[in-house]
Amino acid sequence: MLKVYYCKSCNKIFYLQRETDISCKICSEPMIKLSKPYEEYTRLDEEERKEFIGQDIQKHIQSDIRKGD
Ligand SMILES: [Zn+2]
Image (cartoon, rainbow, N blue to C red; front, top):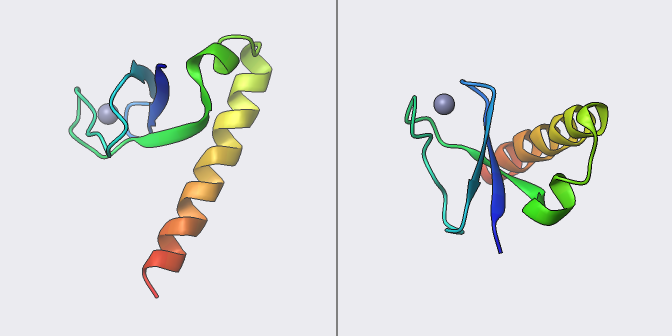
């Protein structure tokens, strides 16, 4: 199943099959793995996608902070 990754630096979405942390093909920054698989993500409309990505970025930031303790 394809996973959806998001690059904060490029503001781009990538669909990938690998599950490990992945660097952006364009800028080499680590990408965020979004919590919905490709099949669910593609069912969202543009507004829902923006909202969903925003929520996942927040979660990602919070988990990074916890890891840093
Ligand atoms: Zn990038």
